[in-house]
Amino acid sequence: MEVLRPQLIRLGGRIYRKNPIQEQTYQHEEEDEDFYQGFVECAEEPCDAYEVVQTQQGFRCTVKAPSLLYKHIVGKRGDTRKKLEVETKTSISIPKPGQEGEIVITGQHRSGVISARTRIDVLLLTFRRKQPFTHFLAFFLNEVEVQERFLKFQEEVLEKCSMDHGVDSTIFQNPRKLHLTIGMLVLLSEQEIQQTCEMLQQCKEEFIDDISGGKPLEVEMAGIEYMNDDPGMVDVLYAKVHMKDGSNRLQELVDRVLERFQASGLIVKEWNSVKLHATVMNTLFRKDPNAEGRYNLYTADGKYIFKERESFDGRNILKLFENFYFGTLKLNSIHISQRFTVDSFGNYASCGQIDFS
Image (cartoon, rainbow, N blue to C red; front, side, top):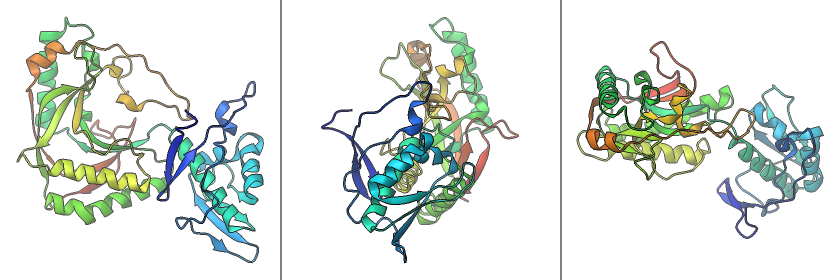
């Protein structure tokens, strides 16, 4: 990170700089347990985004957070909490590990309470981003016709291109798990799953019904494309999905859902638009049939995973199957799907959904 170009973090409609500081590492101890992000600029000024209540003893503010993230506010031997309390002249009460509740900040000065709240939000956001994705918003694309056409695609590719480097049966998607991802989620408690269900229902009422007309969206799954810039070294090959009537309604719908979830903080903003695609081949499947694309980046304790992958030569596949037709579908539901799970039909287990009709 450059000193003159620090990372920017958006909290409550405001943008803060996350300044780099000198960190100490102790032998036999994990680095991130007492990680402290340093001073957050503008934390002392009043912030309307936070509800600070005046009490007889001073001021009080609460923070809702899943219990899995408490340890990052406490730190090793309680060092992070102590540092926060000393620098902001506040007292910070955190529920015991495994207990859901609220972090309570109290202090004599409103500015100190706001400063502590802002810094805690930065810590929570930082370590939430290090958690592995747990769920995703998606349309299922596993209708019988599409599954059959996908298996035909796989059969023909192996028949005509199996001599190409890296092409074999292990890198094909499970036809029962074909899906179109809208966005990835980190949901760390039942309350956050419920919040996601409620947000999705709000999207339905506010704009999805208008865009869909209360009917399923008829789409075609046709043509293939690759993710990177070298067709001779491909890791992900996907089928394109578009509206059968040629309209832009599907793209508009998913982009607005993404925008709403990004604004709520449930989805970290990486892109302004959803790339409509259905993965049909992925080299991560070669060693792990349950792998899920680029999203396997962190373990549960926030450690980065490097997954070595053997790319395949996709030039002949792209030439021979450029316009392959997988079939038509009626998209009628958006699901909150849980990663690494399967339902009775072999698809991802759904924690909730909305239906268009």
